[in-house]
Every structure is written in C-alpha cells, then in structure tokens.
Length: 120
Ligand SMILES: [Mg+2]
Image: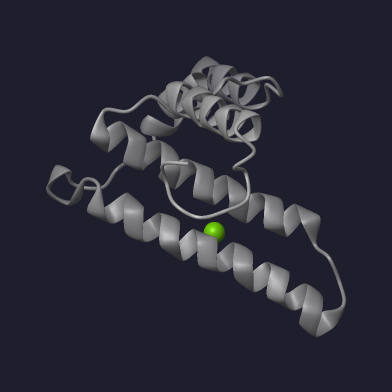
C-alpha cells in the first residue's frame, strides 16, 4: 500500500533541479551493502555500470539505433555508484563537482584543456 512516505519520495525524486548533495543524501537511503565492503563494492559497481553505458553506445554502432533513454538510465546507475563511493569516502558530490569545474576553468585559463597529466 502506498503511504505518504512513498508519495514524498516520489515527489522528491521527480525534482529536475535536484542538487548533487540532495541526490547523494537520497541515494544513501538505498545503499544496502555491508560496511565491510565500503568503497570496494560501489567502485566495482561503478565500473560495471560504466560498461553498461559503453555497451548501449556500442549498440548504436551495431544496430544503428540510439536509445537515449536506456543510456540515461545507465548513466543514472553510474551516478548512484559515484554517490556511494563519495559517501564511503566522506566526500560531498556537490563539492567535487564544484572543484572539478574550478579545475577545468583553470586549465582553460592556462590553455591546458588538451594534454596529459592530472596537475595541468
Ligand atoms: Mg545498469
């Protein structure tokens, strides 16, 4: 039977402007793996889901058909595992996203968007 908690969750998950921090907190409510495999379990899951994205993209080549909805669903699975890895490491997804944009802006400013190395 559907209760108010389910309705609230449905409305929450339908927010198009969900912040990464809100997402991370909501995703944590469905992380049910044992503490003994924290970090490892979601990292392996992320790799698996990234493979699922790649497989869906491969099917564009094989079948000549783009299934954006399916790819989006797999990207969502990736997002869930990213949230879980972040949670296990005590990292905040919103801060990571912000730091990443700052890093890329610095690379653009230094004209090092192209190239190799983590510390450009
Ligand atoms: Mg998947």
